[in-house]
Image 1: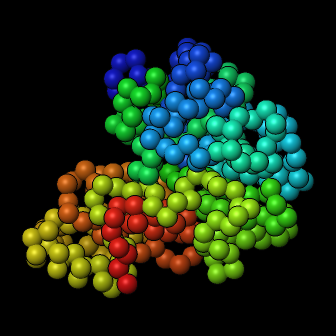
Image 2: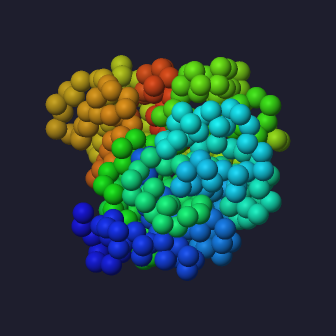
Length: 344
């Protein structure tokens, strides 16, 4: 665990206490979670949360997810907690599930984006939980990167992205899951997944006895409706490298890479099943066919390929399977966000 002295800190008890003190003073602390690193501030301090938006360059109407020490803190943040929320919290917290619930009156507008709902979760990371316990309140913590860019999964990623904009970075090592939490809306009659993650619709159905709608599926609209809460990571363009990114099926991947390289373009490839042709004209990362491993490494791989200074990043289209749905979501938004047009 290395980095600039004083900013990246080993998560000792002393540094956890230091981080809690900084949060109480309205400062920004980057903390590891099992999903990605978050840029944390006191969720009850509007000036502190405003500093998150300034550091990220994030639009002010985008709500923040509030991280809690435990499910016992839910009544402080939500005015109504349905039975399904309690069952899901028991099943998946600590873990990568965010619940959208009607907000308590004391939750600042700066956290909710002016909406009547709030996103809440308990992260499954010992460092995050230690800090939340020491702070004994909610920490608003979107991903610790510039808005729309690749999310950070190591402390070094945070340092590279935000530098002096963050007062302290707690280094908890690489994130275990590697992509953002599932966001489940329980504020309306029918539960709906507004952002896919490691916890799938099928996982949720096994707990609450009914399968939630999933935004983007045939039965659910891709765009927000009037009464749909705005949530993190729902923009069409997000999670994007600077290098134009294209999604291609396996049968087109090698051909397109070779054609672009033959035209003099510098090409980088991320594949999961397509075999490396051994062509020295382009860089090839074989990420493997295990969805959990692929997700764990996804943002690190995209950062590595982006750092090559290539003209194009070509990514093999993920399989159509529930285990890959969150990965497909992130890659689709990354392709739009990078300014590239997805290949047919």
